Amino acid sequence: MESGAILRYLADKTGKLIPSDPRERQETIEWLFFQMASVGPMFGQYRHFAKFAKGKTDTYSEERYGAETKRLLEVLDKRLQGREYRVGSELSIADIATVPWVGALDDYEVKDAVDYASFKSVVAWVERVMTREAVQRGLEVKRVLVRASPRRWRQRRRLGNLRHAAPSHIPIADVVRVS
Image (cartoon, rainbow, N blue to C red):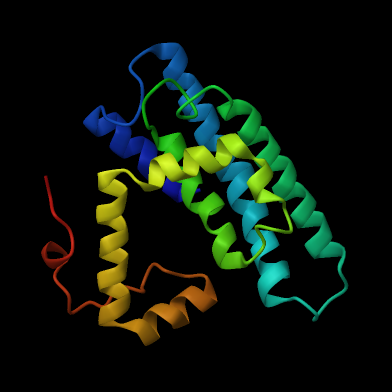
């Protein structure tokens, strides 16, 4: 949950990525909490049982979390119909918090299992966010970090803890362009 708190703090501090209109602001916070309370935990459980525990337990957990992941994709798809972003016409912290989880379905190798392609609005939304210049810059940071320390990155990723994946010998200014 701390990532949601950090996103909200940064949005409030900078006045960016959160609407100034009180109603849209509240909706953004609600959708941020939706990610923190639903998408993150459920997609994470699905990842574990579909990718790492496959064949080690009965199929109940994978089926349960797969069904819940699909239901959450349905909620997102319904919300995104006729919209560019989750709230209003601008990218917000609600989008930033959720897109990585949805995009990670590729890494989980479960897109077919949840019929991802059928969620047309979600697919378009993820593509729209992922092609933004700032997102591409962030992905370049990841590529630099992985190239600098691939073994460490893989170990942390496998453990589900990326907090310490970045090698400490790379100055952040070398990978992040501050604008």
